[in-house]
Image (cartoon, rainbow, N blue to C red; front, side, top):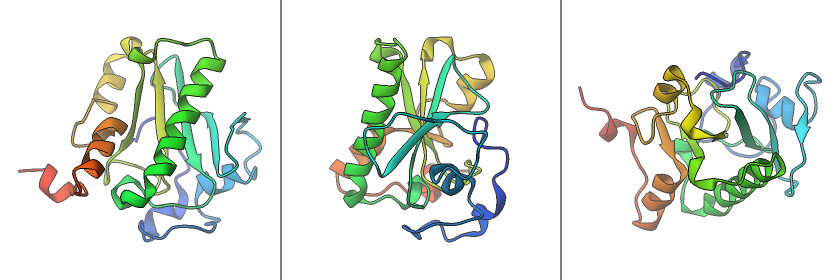
Length: 172
């Protein structure tokens, strides 16, 4: 989807549910292991996560928070992944604060829902200020659309004990 690495590579062909390890074809795995010299990693308080600027920003501040170990996309998340998602949010908030952005009410954090993500490696989009998203970005990062799900909705789905299913979300 817009804003994700253009070189999605072979990650699409992987089983999205497979977790852990390293996929040399996955650009986010390579970035997390500092094998992509053109991508600068930002300071991150957790060793199992990395944060970097999006190459096609949808907002003045647009970062991606990515687990170092290969994890499938957001559709594969289960209740046991809640701590990882919470840490991803903490990293997103911290990077915004380090960049002198403190209005956390004007932030959009979320995931693209398959098949609307170009890289099958879990990654959280952190955009701010959300009030300054352009026309196209407002569509691409539309709150709780068929293609973009916010962290708060993801957490709510865990708290009520069910996993969202794309087949039920899209009706033709």
